[in-house]
Image 1 (cartoon, rainbow, N blue to C red):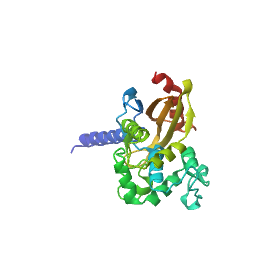
Image 2 (cartoon, rainbow, N blue to C red):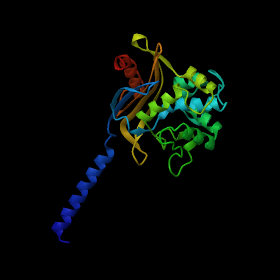
Image 3 (tube, rainbow, N blue to C red):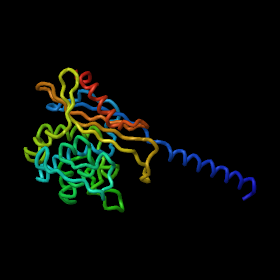
Image 4 (cartoon, helix red, strand yellow):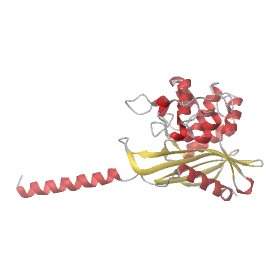
Length: 271
């Protein structure tokens, strides 16, 4: 190779590496979706955005986890069991508190979710997810690690789209999941409630998390925010899922902003 060609090759390689580095550092592509269905008929009342793209459910998974916990008899009622926090779990300060089912859902306590799945056990947990037909039903966790039982829904192997979320919620509110009636009723009682305009009452679960690259590294300031649930006005009931994936630097969790926007917009979207 001549000196001239060698210099050209080196320059080309350097430019290529810079471009690849820039691409890998780029935040995840922004995604926004809101889908609302009539709970009885399944008719789409509103659907906008990329609702078929699947992402980690994060803490929106606390809805199916509650159903599992009550059906299996691990959870008893709105305040039982009440478990103490253990320092060995090394959770953020806001999670370092005694927690019962209501506090779990309200304050989105991760360690409580993990205690529920530990008590379910690997096989029973995986069986519930399969029977619920929840997203891709993959609870194996990160390849090469043994975290499927306690972290598969946290930016890991389990993925679900907004379309799949509303399908699951619709089957829940219509009583079409393979669980006891008590599991439905007790779960309904602990999912957070919010008042919306025009007499609508909303129940739903948020979920948020920092996006990761394929290599498992944090993807800049790119965050994911879910709000998933149902809303009632008189005899009318709808189910919804809304998702935002975007660059996020606010101290307010992206899931809270996503939730508040849905609650504000829902009465107008379902007229």
